[in-house]
Length: 90
Image (cartoon, rainbow, N blue to C red; front, side, top):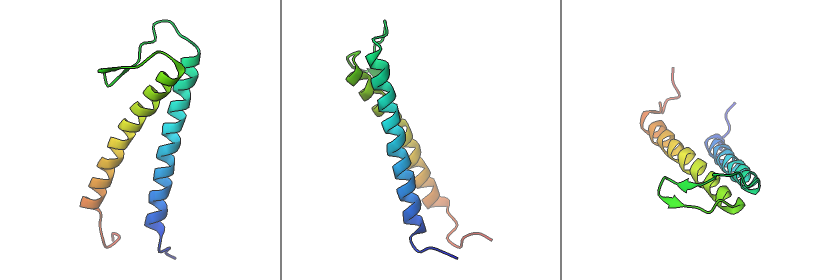
């Protein structure tokens, strides 16, 4: 039994999970930033200095995790389009 929109449903699920994970990372950064830990000095990609505040840490967590997962997601899409078996395998 096949569902016509199964590929679209899968993409929606993965996109939803991506945004949920990035949101959790930003929330964790915000919480860590509110603790005012000594020596906290977030540097985005080793270049851009962010303030050691709750907002700065939330940006750091969200952007870092979003970029890393985004790159992996793009690689996965490229590989799956290039090497996917159009027959469904057998």
